[in-house]
Amino acid sequence: MRQNHIAIIICFLLFNCKEKKENSSLNPENWSKRTVTLKANDSFEYGKSYLSIYSQIYSMSEHTTHNLTSMVSMRNTSESDTIYLLRAEYFDTYGKSVRKYFDAPIFLAPMETTEIIIDEVDVSGGTGSNFILEWKIPQQCPEPLFEGIMTSTMGQQGLSFTTQAKRIE
Image 1 (cartoon, rainbow, N blue to C red):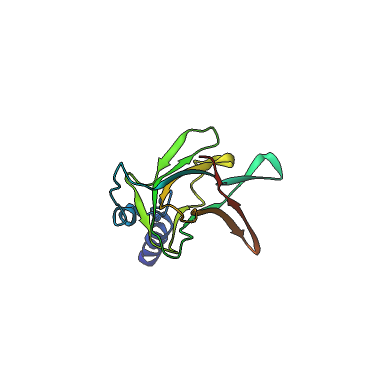
Image 2: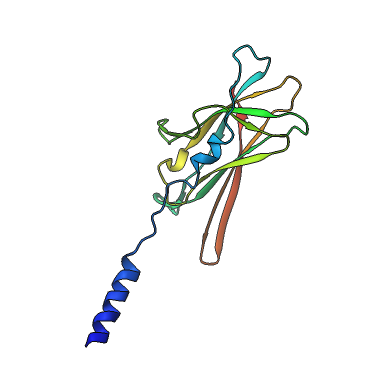
């Protein structure tokens, strides 16, 4: 009888201990290590880009959705210049801001890439989520490259696709 109680307690503990899951695997400390101060009178070129992201897509009908893991890849395409990201803001399907990813400009060294990951369980963006990315680059520097990579796997099936940002300013 005592062994049954112990087995029940162990099962209860195993099945009720849920790992705390964040909505985004982003670690804010990573951004604070990259923070820089830019002067107001700098000679950098300013740009703003729009990137579509999908945290959910429709499956079989408009009433069924499938969750996706989304990655925003932010790449410095210059072999010699450091670039600066001023803003990475995530918006939902209805245009409402979900979150900003850093509060001060951050740098990307030549040829460096950094990512924002939106976990599959984070469906706050919905089927029409997007990012606004603001940046500054030195004169004659190639523009940064921003891509969205969406993936999901279930059983033996896999789904993945990409999007590319469009400069809007």
